[in-house]
Length: 273
Image 1 (cartoon, rainbow, N blue to C red):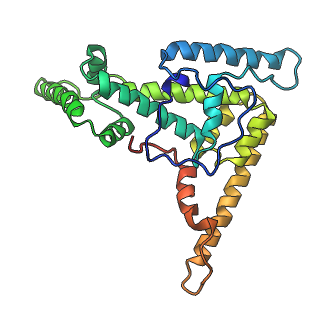
Image 2: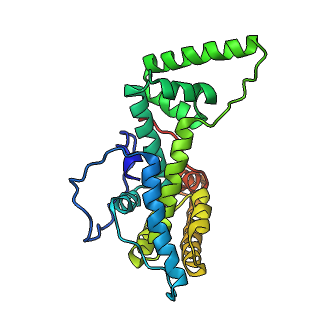
């Protein structure tokens, strides 16, 4: 969503080419500001429900909702050489943590939440470590260390009382991205973009299937992803065959098939910011 998609770090790998941009794209001068998550989630839910209700008003296919800035963020993410939803999730985490370490280390509300969650999720901790804010992390973990020591001394539980605030935030953003993409998946150009892209990781395939409202749209997604996995299997066969010491064929596009297989089967998590 707009507010949770920050600037990707220098380690991002852009796709070979960006997808064609629809002609009704809004101006690139629109501000990419952080808006309150629940407000954005409410707006997205209303748009999705208008689209969903078309199913019950005599239409054979749901009608695509109006395309807004959120849609074009998702559209651009398909240009990456990874699952576009993983890419957006990582950007959401990076933006949230960048803001946290830059201006919220001493925020009382956030610090209280981190005390209740006893720190960060593994993904948020790894991303924070890669960002390298040694002073900010020292301040946060000093307070957490004192808290845990007091709990142990007084025989209190060291089980987190609530989820990591970063993980909770990112989960909302991921759900919003899946919901928005499902609402627009009825459009043929979106399906074609999916077909030409890296497509989704295994976890996001299931999340998209759960979000799509009609068997026809689910069938389209299944067919595209089936084709991707069969192509991947063929490339892995070629890679294995060329790895034989008696095979002198030069490497081709299958040279990184094993890396793409990992990205295809597993949700991609932290990179350095």
